[in-house]
Image (cartoon, rainbow, N blue to C red; front, side, top):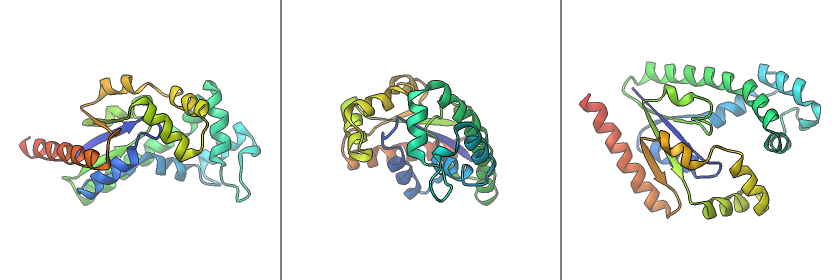
Length: 203
């Protein structure tokens, strides 16, 4: 079994790349999905978040208003760290549980572990290989404006709140530049998948 960490900037196209790996036969563990699950109403992380940030961040169905919470934590580094300290350990627990489940079912699996803060949170230490998805800055800004309806200023603020892609790339075994066409990205993903598969069989 090989755990491949997949990360990139906010809106760099990580989930598109993750889906491509799945189509080629990799198993996927999506930390974003797990992070949504661990903060569902009445779960431990939910209680901690509400206790710290107040009931003002709840929707009518008692779920967490991600946009409202996002606005608080993106403006304030300490609040962001507080939220991460609540959510990350729970997500890591779920990741390890998911890995064991796949191991039981498919011992030779290539597992793509897609984590936005793979490097920052130290999750990369659990990975045999690391892939970083990059985009050039202008494409990055445009995608955020189109995808999330941000103003240019908001988009730049979101990007600069994260570790720069140029830093993340230093940790990478493979870099996928997702600034071009979907076809370019697909062939890049296929090449990397084949390299990883060959290396696994040659060990």
